[in-house]
Image 1 (tube, one colour):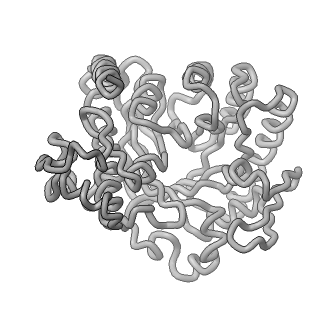
Image 2: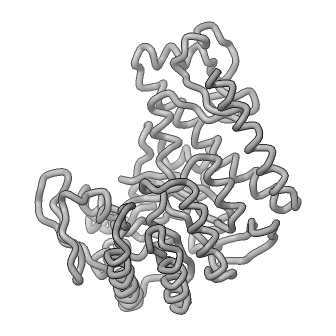
Length: 375
């Protein structure tokens, strides 16, 4: 159940109720693809130290290894990973996109070759729902095709029709399983605004617990992504949560909230952290830079994360230059805290009716930082 509390323009402040607790919206989901955050961060750390509200896991990867039935037999994902937070599971549909060389798409579903050992795998809407049921997620995603950028209009139209048929099959299978998880439908349509709008209207008529915009941040221009959101948003149910899948940078998130989005996920905080790219309140910082050799300040002087409370830029630079695993872990920890703190700040700004001013201030600060970095 979703309750809308405040708005500031199109930006929305709400509460999403799940079986395992309330989620304050807008929010960022911390990506634990295989029930683990890359960078060496555990679920209890996410909950107790990094302001995390939701952990996101992937159906395809957990089905491959260690197996969804094994996880079911061990008590489900929450018990398996010692996670007390709500969990959202991606459907495996993104692998239709990312494993393009290893799959064949048919009406019944997708035939894969495992990226781990090459064994043959089939996943369709029913299989995706059964796997997510075994994992015991709180929010489950419909099985869809994430369309690569640059596809012809004809291909996109046929793909979207199939995604709608798959969504109905997902709903029916979830009902057959008597699953209590909240099913979210996914809007597709590439960068064709009219296809996107038509598809959103069709899936909104199914009255699902929530809706996502998928198939963006896959190679299209930022201007196209924001235009698609603006086209689709008026047709998304006002009383349901809205999820922009796989996005993105802090600026992308702020811009998407400005356009009416509630939910986000991205591997960027940990992927960048493992390579020494740090998100701070003053812009991007590269931890390996020589100028931090004797810098006793924390990564971000405005941050209260465990990394910034305990370690200096000089020490973290040393870890990266020495190729110590701890460097990536501390940087990833900071970046996740930064993202979750950013969403916390966004919620407060929407409540206060000052989000638009905050957005403008952030954009100005970012542009000055980019200019400084480039000089």
